[in-house]
Length: 290
View 1 (tube, rainbow, N blue to C red):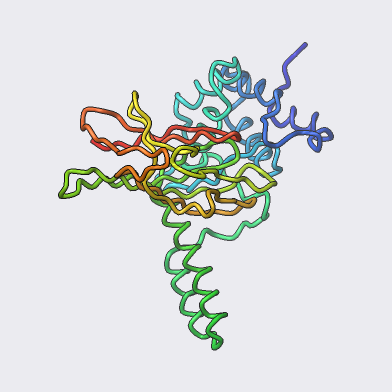
View 2: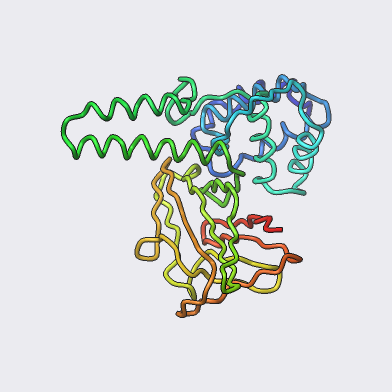
């Protein structure tokens, strides 16, 4: 059997079946396209056009990705290698999607949000400051505060997305701007971690669970020992993230507060990771504390 001439030809052939595709799992036939592109059987232009079609129609879900100011017309070799390895089942879907995110970042793949169908330009910090000024014109105190809180939340999200590394765990995309390590006068190291958790991959609510130091799906790992938190801002042990919603998470690792907790220990020679181990997904985030 001959291979289809282009990626778009494949898309047209399966177009009537896309309503049966589970958008949270990449369809197998996309692997064929990735493999053929890596082998040179279809062009980069055809493959990119196919990706844009799949993303914009919700068949292939890619976490929100900030477009870089530095653009490129060439696909890096590692992205093409990823496509080949993923087609052969040698790397995970998450690894393949990270390559697609990079193509979006450098401007090779251009998309608009399929859920909102919003093609308006990305708002800048100045745009949000103007929105805050408009909030001040609201006379009712409650409505004015609500307006300001909404805009400040948008500003927080933009700052995270402009200054963070992305880590995907199932339906949740974590934006991590970096950890803060402080050695107290007593010698106790205090490690502060903050992240933005965004529900990018589920049409249902996703619950982040941490009911106590001894029963928490989040910890810090040094390769040999797991450290439990000293404080966090989980409400009643859980944070619920609705579809498309973003919520900030703050955790402190330091003194042992009991209840199955641990005292955080720091050695410059060790590599530390913040671990997410939820039933719906997991990831390990390097903290780079050296």
